[in-house]
Image 1 (cartoon, one colour):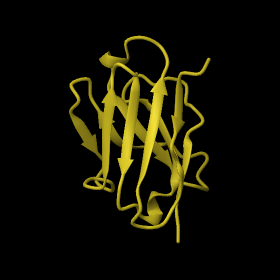
Image 2 (cartoon, one colour):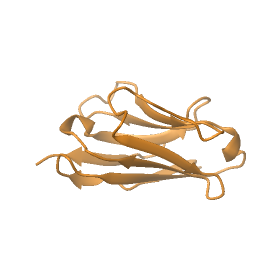
Image 3 (spheres, one colour):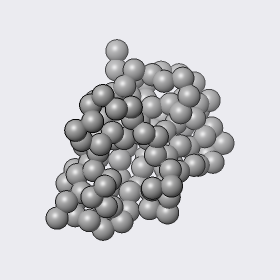
Image 4 (cartoon, one colour):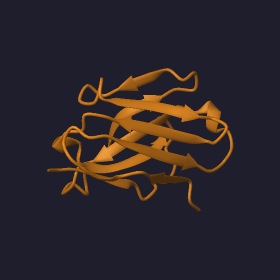
Length: 117
């Protein structure tokens, strides 16, 4: 059973922007904090790093590496979470995943973001 579906990744030049989207199945979406995670290439055994969270009250938190460049938001009616990524850097290259920031659901496929000139 698919719980989360991510989309919006792609290839972008340094300094460019992308907007990621995630839709989550199931009920009680509004009750949970949601997060965007990422895992860099060549690190399949490494845990995913949490880069941004949006809480049930729409407050947000960011990892130091993305603060000021990424913006997370949510739409409880659509059960969707978004990640606006601006001023992208090569080190942002990773597979990005959406999940709860809390009790995790099974991971989705993720969406690949590649930042390269």
